[in-house]
Image 1 (cartoon, chains in turn orange, blue):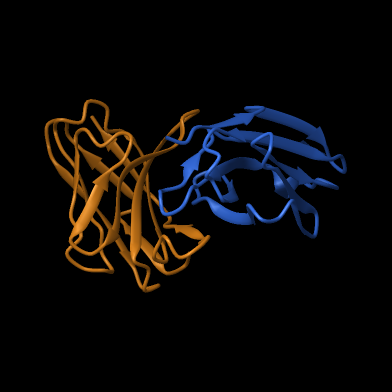
Image 2 (cartoon, chains in turn purple, blue; image 1 turned 120 degrees about the vertical axis):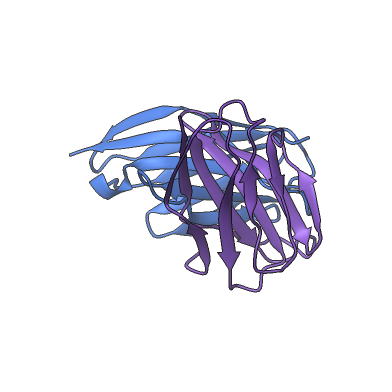
Length: 115
Length: 111
């Protein structure tokens, strides 16, 4: 998990502004994921990507967008369409799925506050 | 799709006692069941996992059991210590689909 970085650790934005959260990994993992964490809600999947230039919506994709142009990078944009964007955002990665059970590791997270 | 239920949501134990957290899953195709520990403000850390071809796995004070017939799995922590206080998440996955997480259990170990 030490090979996954997220920046910044804390992010403050005004309502109505788009904001992009960074996620980079040097573990040579094929799959990357974005989760949102709210108190008492556990970890909810926003988007995931199993291969470069391809990604799928998770359970709560509305108001978010992603890109996967490089294997190492999976940035998340929180758009102004997201009704309640204040949350703790966690990025994760794992080796290529479908080849057996695999461990998933998390980055340190970005705490986003929108006022 | 998969649905994972986790109980209890909060758990308080005396130091030295055992703690048990239980999860159920809905998709009989699920074959991988990890447990994560998350300390306040930190990332979730994988502490133990179990594959569907194994019924029990142990690592020092931590053990996980899996009952495929009943579709439930449990985390057991023995001889609890104050540093075990954290939020614990179970998860399940079928094939190459993403992990589905339970809502977490806040464990407090009282010294």
